[in-house]
Image (cartoon, rainbow, N blue to C red):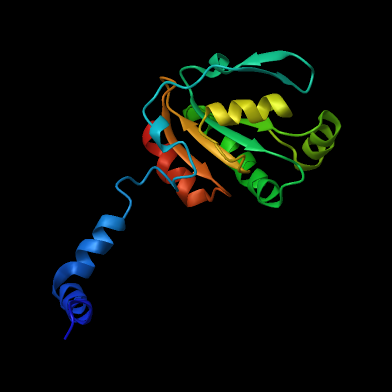
Amino acid sequence: MTPRHLLSPFLALALMTGGLTFTAASLAPTTAHADSNLTGAGMQGQQRPDFTLHDLEGEPRHISEWDERVVLLNFWATWCPPCVREMPLFVDMQEEYEEQGLTIVAVAIDEHQAVSDFLDTYGVNFPVLIGEDDAMDVASEYGNRFGSLPYSVLLDRDGKVRYIHAGELKRDTLEREMKPLL
């Protein structure tokens, strides 16, 4: 047998005797907080970046307005199907957890009229900021390197990034990450 032919039995033996367990363990995420390497996982525990964007009335709103509250920043757009599917959940979560200190802040990467029409339809009960390209810059500062939508960032009461999620956020995941911070 050539050395190359010995490699296959060696790998098979290694996998059967624990190598597979080691490999699976080494591939498992080391933290439950990062959904993928596409998110700003290195930002977790870091102070949130500051930003100011305008609301629907054209008033500038600064992220520091919600200091001392647990904040879910959600970057979204009206033309994004998973973003639209999240909105009823966020309306419910805001209503259910507002008194415990939750504020959802939706950052629309969209045009003013489209957002206004959307909000009228869905009865959104939390602050909505509009930024178009500026909002994408803010999302990037929060670790959204590839412009994923929806993109959510959970901040604790001290303004530290505690959880980042690229893609549609489900209730069980949001509650699991949010409840310990309330």
